[in-house]
Image 1 (cartoon, rainbow, N blue to C red):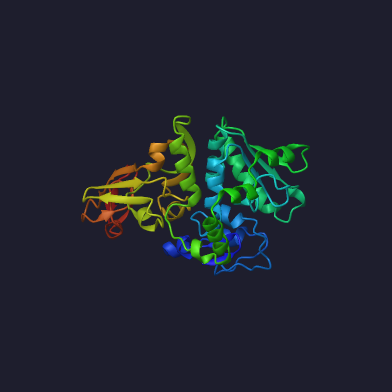
Image 2: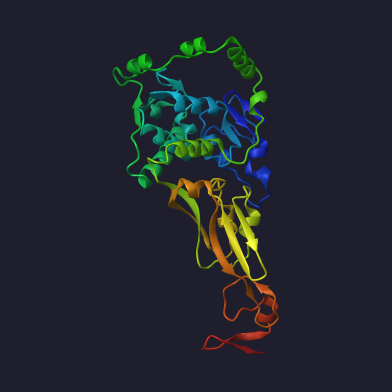
Length: 348
């Protein structure tokens, strides 16, 4: 693990560590506006501003916000949610930047906003050195907004809005008040963990934390939202039943059940981190990631994504992975000169 105060790199959570792939994931490196991440995922403390963009773009919690559990506890337990970035007046629970908010966390906030007021205070982002991280998060928010038109409102205000910060500070429990309600053992443990971050950040887990937060929040409030717009895998009729997608999935979100005659693809949306390795490896171009209206049961369960019959060479009986008629393996196809006008084959 590599640490830089509020950012943790969990090596075993990184997709590149989970399963080898010809195209290494470089989302964190390519997205960092300060070139603070090396090819070995080491953070340059002099360059890193803790903007959080690496966390928002990382699909599997390779990079993760160290205090994400505390943030979720605050969101879940507060009667009124007030978040602020470091550039804004400290009006509530401070987060490093809007850049830490990925799609799942935005949706979690929206689910909570149905029951309680939720306000985010920011500084003037255009003047902030982390404006690219904020811009990425806002883009993600807009994508959610476009696919979930009737989502509960979230108020995003700049810190200079008259009266808002003062009101929020009166109504939000201060850190001092929270500490007064904690026992001395809790306070001491938190201080000790802050000094030695490795104690609490050496985690390895399959499902990213923000996905866990979304699932937990939705499960407790599923009566209010029967379906949500969730990016999920889709398969077309051009699938050749090769099963390579299940082999390449680093999350185990795709598994195959096969017999001599048939292949079934089982999909678990909760595990899927949308890395799209399966999409890029599919030679038949049968897979795509699309926004679907999923119920909680489908998100948390197993879905029969595809049910297909295997194809075998009409001459030698070897299994083939294409949809040509008649089905022929490469060796048998080479024995034919070409295709006639009726769509059949004639032998050399």
